[in-house]
Length: 413
Ligand code: NDP
Image 1 (cartoon, rainbow, N blue to C red):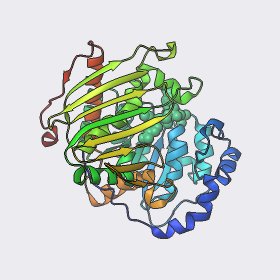
Image 2 (image 1 turned 30 degrees about the horizontal axis):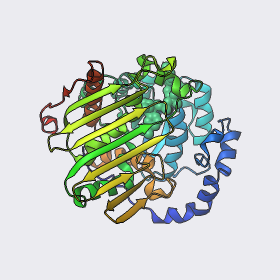
Image 3 (image 1 turned 90 degrees about the vertical axis):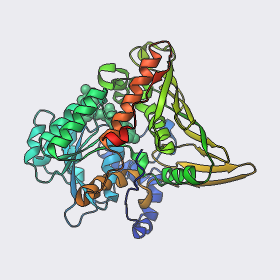
Image 4 (image 1 turned 45 degrees about the vertical axis):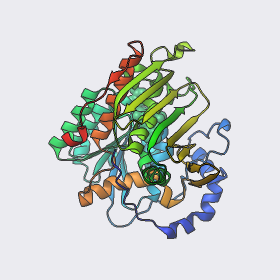
């Protein structure tokens, strides 16, 4: 896994400016009211202190910035990505693509995007003639990632595509090939690579725990079948898989990132579904990844548990604990030796220097401008899809070990 830093300059000044406003947002105040006046639902009461995205923050305009078209105006796009542009140094949103043109209009009005930069899936290819769009950010159900990536490359745009990159290895390969043919960049939306807590954990893993031995990682959430955001996740033709594809991927990618190597063997077991709504996909899965170094990672993913996002790394001399590890905010890492614990954490994602979403958006802009390497390439995304497919293969063949010793693929790309 690449360990490039996001190259995001720290703007300490804005940290100060956001202080008072941020406090009211986190209290669920102004941002929530504005969101409701725009017709977006309030966050469910059960989410407690979850901050509502700060829709009040002004766009950070200035000299021409790298323009993104956002494709798919669902939960992640509307609640996390669009508000994050306000804290970008180099990127801005310049176009919206949706199956619901009225939703696009409503959001376009708020973000200052004119009708001429609003697209539907049918007329999306016209984006080739839109000079304001440098890159397309694909935030659609998983099985639509490959087609829209290819269409975006055909339109001559760079692509940022959400995880999982696609639902099959063949699709991933097609996406990589299309990017090379177009001479454009393909980045996968592994936002945790831009979280300073992840960077601290990597630094500690490489310097202060001795030899890495055992990783334990668990990722899960509850499923609300009445919420559209879960409906496609329960439908194999749209999701390509269940808890492992959607949430377990954080543990799969994180283990490789942390150990800086790829597993040579995997094994997995899918538990029988506890509810018919999970009949098409894995509700709960447990897995093992063995590494050449002797390290082993074991993990679980579930669509039917109270939210969990844990990552532990046990070394010969010390251990790292991350809980939550891959949340949108408030991640933390503890370094523990016998009788001694130190914890580093992000207070809230609205602190500019720590906004992983903005850092990710800026990263592609910087990479294109300077032709510098990407932190999360298509090849990285494909490796995770390949490993996930190997885990499904194991689970569907009586949990037999499946070799993933595919050679040193990093040297072959
Ligand atoms: P949502 O269901 O909330 O949004 C998906 C959007 O895709 C819909 O709102 C819709 O937008 C569009 N869409 C187009 N065709 C379909 C279809 N057939 N069925 C459903 N939606 C369709 O999903 P999320 O926003 O949660 O997830 C989208 C992607 O982002 C997934 O790949 C997911 O894995 C990834 N994701 C990544 C996260 C991260 O932390 N990196 C977090 C959450 C999601 P419209 O109405 O505008 O057409």
